[in-house]
Every structure is written in C-alpha cells, then in structure tokens.
Length: 294
Image (cartoon, rainbow, N blue to C red):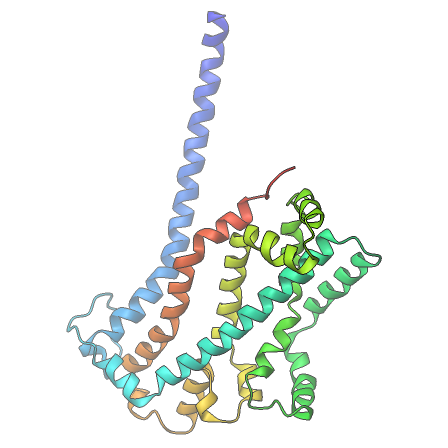
C-alpha cells in the first residue's frame, strides 16, 4: 500500500500543478476582461469630475481628476431635466417588471405543472416569437396602439410586457425542477391554481425573479426606439429619449462640453449599476441551483 501511494503521488502532484497553472491562466484572462470593462468607465467618471477637462478632453487619457469638481454634474442637472426623465423611466420600468414577471410566472407555471393537451405547441409558438426582430414589430404595434388611443401613454409599454416569451420559458425550465408534490398537497388543501402559482411556487423562484428584474430593468432603462415612436409629450419622455431629443432641439448648448456629456452618461448608468450590485448574487444562484429535488 505504501509503494502504491509512492507511485501515485507524482501523478497527483502533476495534476495539482496543472490545475494551478490552469487556474492562474484563467484568473489572468478574467482580470484582463474585467479591466477592459472597468477602465473606460473609470476614465468617464474621472473626466466628468475633472475641472481641467471641462472644455477639452486630454490625450493621452488621465485616470484621476487633476482639479476635482462636481460642476459638470451640477450643469448637467441644470440644463437637462434629468430627474423628470429618470422618474418617468422608473415608472415605465416598474410597470414592465410587474406585468412581465406576473405573466411569466403564471404562464411558466401552467406550462410546467398543469398537464394540458398542446402545451408543447404553445411553448414552441411562444419561443418562435423571440426570433422575430423587435424593430419589425414596432410599426404594426404603433398602428394598433394608435387605433386604441394609447399613443403617448405608458400603457403602450406595459401591455406588450404581458407577452414575455423569454421569461415564460425561463420560469418553465426553473419550475420543472420543483417537486409536483407541492402542487398536489396544495390542491388537497383546496388551493386554486392561481394561489398555488403566486403563493407557493413564486416565493421559491426568488433567484429567478431577481435575474428577470435585472434583465427587464436594463432593457427598459436603455430603450430608445420604442419610446421615440410612441411618446409625443416631452413631460413623458424616458431618460434616453429625453437626453437625445433635448440635444436635437438645441437645448443643450452648455452640455456640448465634453465633461458635461460624460457627467450625463455617468448619471444614466448609475441606477443600472446599483440594481446589478444589489441583485447580482441572485443571477449566480438562478444559474447554479437546479431547484428542490424530489
């Protein structure tokens, strides 16, 4: 036994050495990838806080403010109604998140737990809609909402959110790993399907819901094309549309300064970063966890 241990120890040592080298290479690759994402953002923030870069960008780039100031942010909020645009975008995002997640939970629960004829066909039809490019649907969708008098209304954002095919598929796959015995026990106790979906299965999908919240919020926050088509009142503009239209209409002469433009961009990114930092651990859980096993 001792001889065997002595013979196998060099192999074990070689395996550990290879694993260590692989881990080091992987960490180096991840570090380089992280730096390529962090460095542009860091430069943007430092330039927005640099008094010397107020009128002209410095080349080569400087990654620390030489003359620290928040004047660019002050001028940005004074020249652009940023708070109004941000509040409008939060309202649209909140409605999209609520409608999308509720519809995805109920549809995913039905496809996963309720055995009905044609469920696979329904799922395939729903998934096929993902392959249709969004811009192709914008014109017919606009005419539809125009016919119903919903132009310049936030309902034009919330109603389409009810058909969240990706979320439905995501929820369905997640709920497949949750035991059917929970539904059977609830049915014995007299609970209806809606109550089972929302009060029993939905709390078990916390990591999944957090992931969907980030994806929906990010998509809504950065959306520009659909708000430009459907919104006509400046008081209802979302953030991306408001900044773009305010600039096109000649209202941002003062914000032509590089530092102020970078300050506006920084402010528009901060809510997304905060949302991601608060919920990012749930993304890992939703991917790593396979659910409760029977």
